[in-house]
Structure formats: structure tokens, C-alpha cells
Amino acid sequence: KKEADHIKAQRVVYQSLFNFNCFCRSSPLDTMFHLAQSLYTHLMEWPEYSVLILGLDNAGKTTLLEELKERYIKGYKKIPSGRIIPTVGQNMTTLAVDNEVRLKFWDVGGQDALRELWEDYYSDSHGIVFVIDSCDAERLNECKNTLEKIINDDKVEGLPILMLANKQDMPQALEIANIKEVFNKMAEHLNANDSSVLAISARTGEGVSEAVKWIKDRVVLNKDARPPKFRK
Ligand code: G3D
Ligand code: MG
Image 1 (cartoon, rainbow, N blue to C red):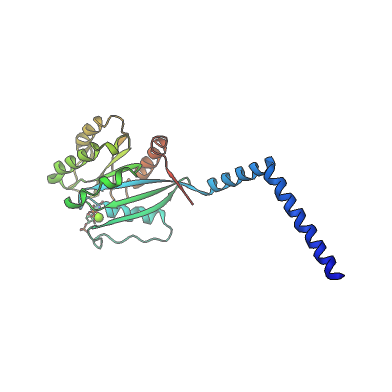
Image 2: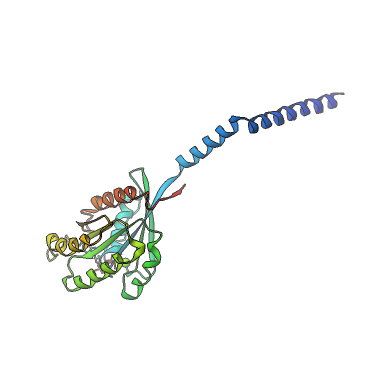
């Protein structure tokens, strides 16, 4: 008899649970539950923007990425300058910035042969950081042509472009005013693109915070045209 009573009680519990489930499913409670669930999931996800770091080989792209990692990844120690080897494939890192967004930085090799690969990344990017070696006056023209080619690609239209005059810690570095003169002129032809030229030293870290702030603000501003990805 005891066993029969137990089974009976169990049935009552199961029936009540089943009824409650049916009630929830057929009532506004169900809708509210799903709304709350999707809101919670959305709040737990971060908007993620991809930023391409481009420029000629030796401009300082990987050094900049290392500096960014040290700043934004707790406990990360950057590879000392002099020990960074030329980039053949790609380096990528995702950084949480201002507890607000994630910026996924792509450092793609800058040697002549590798530049052809850059355009594969354009469609999935939200912004471009173009690194210029301020100490290499001889290659300034090549640098300009390379940037021109990037800008003229349809897939880049409307993307914010930040030009960084790197290696400003060196005494022989070209004046930022001279670099601006060359690159701001190009920026005038950018039409829909938002652009700026900033002075930095990827080696000492000078100007790097301002650069991150600029690119973060601009990709967020451009989010309707190029929406971010949302990830946990
Ligand atoms: P890349 O990734 O664009 O090809 P790297 O360039 O980051 O590999 O840097 C190329 C060289 O430039 C490295 O020198 C690096 O230390 C140097 N460099 C990068 N940024 C700066 C900077 O802001 N100031 C100075 N003074 N040097 C910089 P080595 O001698 O290691 O090849
Ligand atoms: Mg490199």
C-alpha cells in the first residue's frame, strides 16, 4: 500500500509540473521568459569590431600589436624589440577596451607578396590602422601608393582609416607636420571615410592610447553601416 501511495503522489507531482509547463507555454509568461532570456544573452555578449593593421614591412605593425597586448592583457609581457621576427602569416589578438567593446586586431604581413592578401580581410573589417615608418623617407612614396590602393578598394568604402606616423621616438624621424601634409591630402579624397593622422612610437608606447581611442570611437560611430559581431 505504501508503494502504491508513493506512486500516486509521484503522479500528482508530475501532473502538476506538466500543467504548469502548459500554462507557461500558452501564457504571456512564456513570451516574457524568452524576452528576458534573449536580453540576458545579449547583455552577456560583447560587440566585437575587427581592425586591420596594415603598412609596409618594417613599419612597426607587430611592435604595435605587442604594445597593445601588453596594455590590454593583464600579465602579458611584450616581445622585446629586436626579438620580433618578420610576419609571414598573420598575428591576431582580441582586446577588451574600456569595458565597452572588443577590438580584434589583425596584423597581416606587409611584404610586397603578402599585400595581395590584404583585400581578403576588407569585407569583415570595421576599421583600418595604417602604420607609416617615419624614419623611412625613401619609401614614403611606396607607402603612399600602398595606402592609395587600399582606399580605392570598394570594400573599404566608408571604413574609418587611422594613419599612424610611427617611430617618432627616433631623432631622424620625419616631422609629423610633413607626414600630415602628404597623407592628409590623400584623406581629402577619402570622401565618406573618416580619417586622421596621429604620431606614435610603438616602441615607447607614446600616442598609442590616443590611437586606440580614435579607432574605437570611429568603429562604434560607424556601427550602423558595419555592425559589430556579438560574442560571449
Ligand atoms: P612590421 O611588423 O611592420 O614588419 P616590426 O615591423 O614590428 O617587425 O618592426 C620593424 C622594426 O622597427 C623593428 O626593429 C622594430 O623594433 C622597429 N620599430 C617598430 N616600431 C618602432 C618605434 O616606434 N620606434 C623605433 N625606434 N623602432 C621601432 P628591429 O631592429 O628589431 O628589426
Ligand atoms: Mg610584422
